[in-house]
Image 1: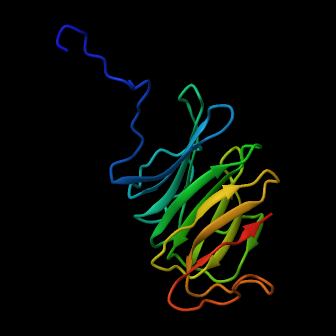
Image 2: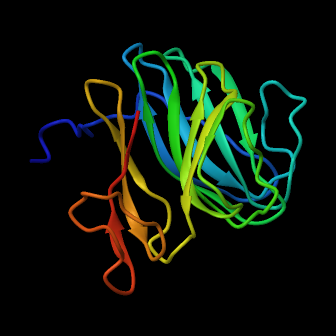
Length: 193
């Protein structure tokens, strides 16, 4: 009806750019109970914004995780990666502000946190845990990368992390529904506490 005013709904309440001189690809966004929002992306920019600013740049494709306040202030921006391709997947935030990010790495020198590291090997798919201030505190490397890529994540009410994805080489546990890969790439559903 041309007699009525044009109303575009919903309207954009906030927008910003985040990046450097190269290409950035956002892979995940999640929001905590306080309205802080977290973005996981991969970056091809040696000058991607870092907070704190003294973080090294590893290669031309690193994982970047940025946290913004509900008032759109950058609280941290962490760069994580080795000398080859490192890609984030999904992200989920716990009630204490810890952030979990699924990832895939081809870097044999992917950084290991000073805290807990679960799993062996140097490349593959896994999960990173970042503190409320953006420090890498734990990592679980689930096994070799496959065409299925990084895993999806969720947290249950007891703060157990549930992960899903595809694998061709990670064994199940004794007593699980299926303890071995049946052929090609199968679905993997581990839980970490």
